[in-house]
Image (cartoon, rainbow, N blue to C red):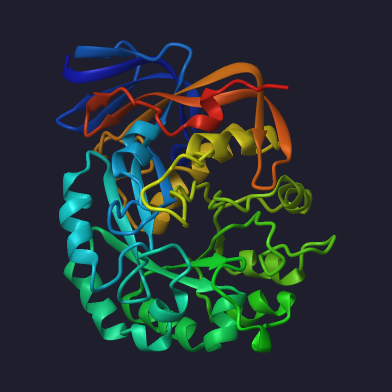
Length: 403
């Protein structure tokens, strides 16, 4: 009988990519998934009795160009120490700054770090406040983006751009069309921020419900719209009582919707969207520090596990929640070695505890939601090696409800 390096025993294995949701052992050998089964022999065992064992969580939206962007966080604090084995930085780095990002973030982190490179050559430096300098059409070079993506296809998996009132009022579609061209030329997906962010030229402010219909025809299947449950008037849902028809049409033709939890997530919008059958395709955190100070995360009060907990409390089934943080983001990244627990794939796993209890979780506007349980990472496994997460930034699910 084969003796494996490590067997995770007794857990409820939830692997939506394979349609698995039952008690199983997971065996690992040489940093790869070796087998799923029962009574598997191993040199080491990790007891997961009463816990959920799933593919390593993938956080599709973080900001981790620490010390270069003012709002960048530590990669491992947002990754393995928050329960995620893979994280994707969204637009902190551009073609001119990617070398430093690879050397000082990707290559030094225990977490698997990928990047959607900003359409702007410099990336982000100070939140959205330098938009006029950094995000204008003269700061985009599609040739450089295509060359960079070709030079590092493992880590560069898409491009970050913006479809919001500030962008359209200042430059019309000029910047966005360059992003579309970069995606078309490389075959990589776009990740599109929605909801007003950049300073708006008030003389040319677009009608708020015209913003998304203006950019959606340019998107291809597989591109991603961020902040699906944003409260911003020019966001995906807007302020009306009904979800616009073009939202359903976009989903039907393969445009994906991401939570991108961040500071504008709204329970009011989430309930309206869910009532019309619109759940997110992916759940991500949009973890970042304060836009208006330097290297300051004291105001951060949300997390990936917190976003997953909120979706559970809003009625999204556990299997779909796990799928939205594992299999679907892995497909967006085009990586067939993560996102599932199939033999031969990388042994990146997350062991979650679903802790019962009355927990109070607030959205970006301060509205409270009571959850009957919360998801917390108990262990992560990276390439077969167990890590106990510090949970340092999981403030929303580490503190009990008060009041």
